[in-house]
Image 1 (tube, helix red, strand yellow):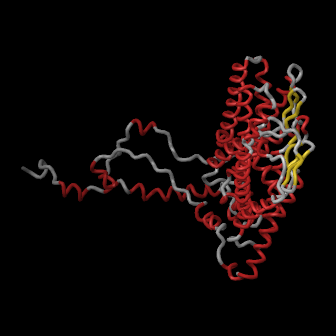
Image 2 (cartoon, helix red, strand yellow; image 1 turned 120 degrees about the horizontal axis):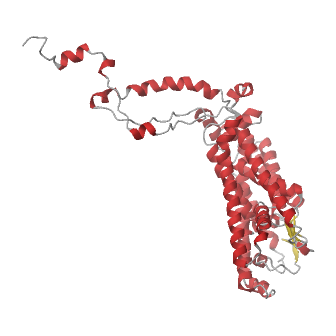
Image 3 (tube, helix red, strand yellow; image 1 turned 90 degrees about the horizontal axis):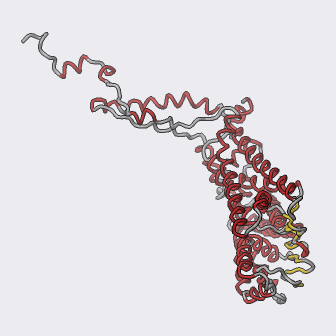
Length: 483
C-alpha cells in the first residue's frame, strides 16, 4: 500500500498539528447557555445605584407595612371593630412601631414601648449590612442614605395624613409633625449606622479627615452601653421576681380588665422591657425616676397610685437606707470594661460624650407623657449628666492610673485597631466570579487550565473601571470627587 493511501500514524499527525488546531470546540449544554451571567454588575450612575439598592431598603419597609396591615385587619375582625377604622389603625400602629407618641380619645401615650422600634432598626441594619458587605463607594453610601431617609419619610407622611383625615370621624389625633415625620427617619438612620461595618466606618473617617480612633472608641462606648443595659435589665428582673405578689394586687385593682385584658397587659409588659432596662439604669446611676407627682431613686421613694402594668410591681413601696450600695452595679460594669483598655485623653473625652448622647436619646425614647400621670421616666438631662460623669470619670481614672503605672504600654497595639489594618488589605480584594463549567471532550481536558491563566488579564482591564467608582478610602478619594 502506498503512502498516499495509508493513514498517517498518530505520532506524525500530532507532530504536524499546531496546539490551536488540536483544540476542539467546547460543547455547551443548553441549560448552561441559557444561564444568566452571574458576574456582579457595578452601577455607574446615581439612577443605577438607586435601582440597585432599592430592594435592600424598600423590601423591609414593604414587609413592615404589610405586616402592620395584616395585624390591624386581624384585630378588627376578631374584636368586631369597624372596617372603616383600618386606615387609621394602620397609621397609628406605624407610629407606635417607631416610638412616636400617639393620642387616642384625648389621652396621649408618650412612653411608647421600645421593643418594636429596636426590631425595626435591627431589620434595617441587617439589610444595610447585606448591601455594604462588598466594596462600596461614597456615592453608593449616598444612594443608600437617600433611600433610608426618603422611604420612611414618605410612609410617615402618608400615615400622618391618614390619622389627620380619620380624626374627623374617630377619636384619634395626629401627632406633632416633627415627631411623626422625623422620629421614624431617625430610627431607620440608627439601623443604617449599626448595619455599616467598622471597616466601612474607618474608611469613611479617613475620607472626611476624622481621626480613626473615633471609630474604635465609639464602638467601645456602644458595647459598654449594651453591657450596662443588660446589667440593669437583669437587676430589674430580680426586683420584679421579688415583687411578684404585687402583680396580682395591681390587676385586682382594675376588675373590669378580664382575662383578655390581663393577657394584653402581660404582652405590653414584654414590649416595655427595654424601657424598664433604661429606667433601671438611670436609677442605678443615681437619677430619680419620675412617676406622675412622685419619684423613685436609690435615696428615697414617693410612690403614687400606679397604672395596672405588671412591670410596676418591681417598684418597692419604700426604699431601704442601704439601697445606695447598688451604685456599685454600673460602677463595676464600667470599671471591668475600661480596666484592660489603654485609652488616650482624646478617647476619654469621646467616650464621655457618646455616653451622654446615648443616655439623652434613650431617656427621650423610653419616657414620655402618659395621660393624667404626666411624665413617666428618667429626667433626660439628669440622666445625660449622670451617664457622662460615670463613664468619663471612671475612664479618666483608668487613663491616669495607666499613664503613671504602665507608661510602656503605649507602644503596644490596641485591640480595637486590628480591623483598621485589615481594611487596606481586604477592601481592594475582589475575587472574580467563577465561570460556570462547561462540558469538554476527552481530548480537550489537558487545555482546560489555559483559560484560567488568561482571566487575570481580563481582571486587570476591569480593575480601572472599578477604581473609577471611587472607593471611600483615602487613596481613591480624588477619583471619587472627579466622578
